[in-house]
Image 1: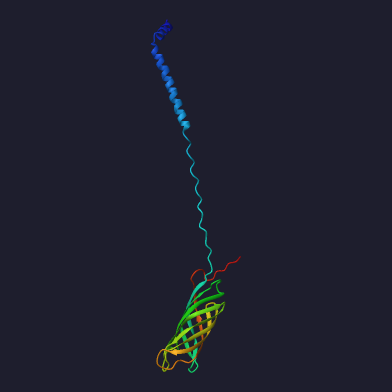
Image 2: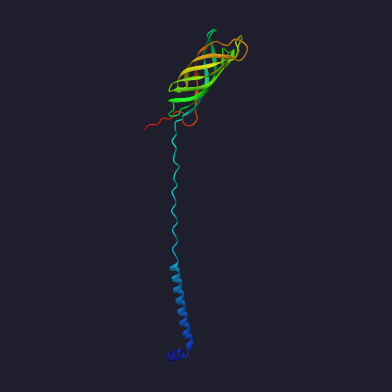
Length: 211
């Protein structure tokens, strides 16, 4: 009797209600399918670009300098042919450039300031040339007046030999005129030594490479 009542109840349910259930199920399935398709259509994220390797800056090997400045004290003895020998003490500044290879063939210049016997001054300036350990200075000099001697202008010539920081030079000074009243100094002969510290201007002072 209970079963019969249930059948009667279902048989008397309005037909529109079943249609709504079917429509609802179909709509839910369609929405689920659309969501699944959208998620599948989304492109995968692009991979991060690989890091570019950083190249280290190339190291520059030190090079041998070819331009030098030298400065240091000079000392020695000098004597005019008609005067006693006197001591000299002063300072010299020089510059040398090696066009091809350091310490082979160089060109440059020099400047000297010194006292002669601590009684008067002497100055010289001019170009210089050197080949390995040998060289020569050729320039002009001015020797200050002293006593009856006038300030004298002349030719300075001085061949030298150098070894490391030390050099020894024979000096010849030939007077050519005067710049004040009095007698000019006579021919001057001397032996002058120098201890100069070389300063490299464009590289290492001594650069040695082994291949």
